Image 1 (cartoon, rainbow, N blue to C red):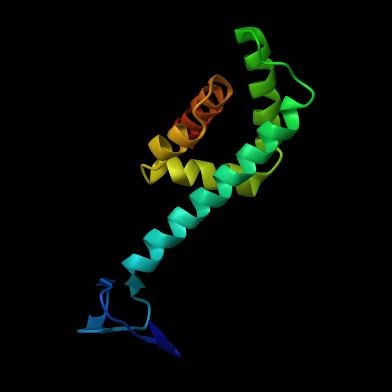
Image 2 (tube, rainbow, N blue to C red):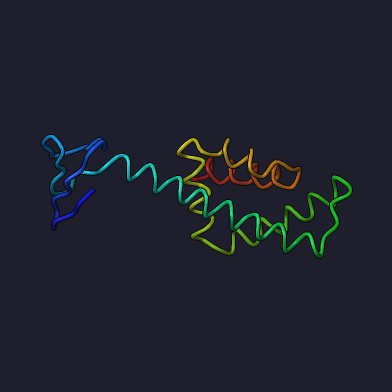
Length: 124
């Protein structure tokens, strides 16, 4: 996609808004780029969560359900202290990407974190 001011010349992308074939103008949105941005945000959020869980695993055992819940609580506290990360996760849930997130964090602690995200989503 090539950009010139507010005009984007594109091939194989779908434009939504004011457009003509192969050109998106003004305040129109390019759907392919928006979707890619959501996927990138999800990938970044997943990487951040994995890093948080890895850091916490050094200090918190996860042999029992109670220990897993304690570690998940600490992870959730860290997420809540980072409004940008929390919003990325809520947005991922709203975009229907929570299932993908759940598969990547395929462990009991991750399941608790996903439950928290679902709760935030319902509360927002």
